[in-house]
Image (cartoon, rainbow, N blue to C red; front, side):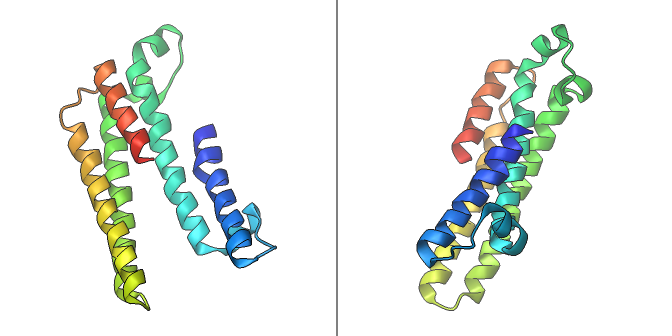
Length: 159
C-alpha cells in the first residue's frame, strides 16, 4: 500500500503541483487540488498508482518460501507465484499500451507539429516499454527467485 499511496500517487501529484506553481505561477496548486481538479494529474497518478501495485505484488513473488514459513499470506502465497507473475505482467503491458494509445490520439490532435511529435515519441516509447515488459518475462520462471528478482529489477528501471 505504501508504494502505491506514496510513490504512485502522492509524490507524482506533488511534482505536478510544484510544476504548476513554479512554471505557471499557480499558487493554488496543491496536491489535493491537483488530484481533484486536474485530469492530467489524476491520469499520471493513476498510471503510477497501477505501476506501484504491479511492483508491490511482483516483489512478493520470489519470497513465497519465506512467506509460507513466516505465515505471511501474500497474494503469491494464496493464489500462486505463476498466477501473480502473469497477471502483473499482463496488467503492466496493458497499462503501457493504453498510455501509448492516449499519446497517439493526442499526437494527432496536437495544435503544433512539435507537440504532436513529442506525443508521438512518448507513445512509441510506451509501446517499446510494453514489449519490454512482455519480452523480458518470456524466459522467466515465476518459481525461480533469482529470475523473478531480475525481472522485478527490470520493472524498477521502467518505473
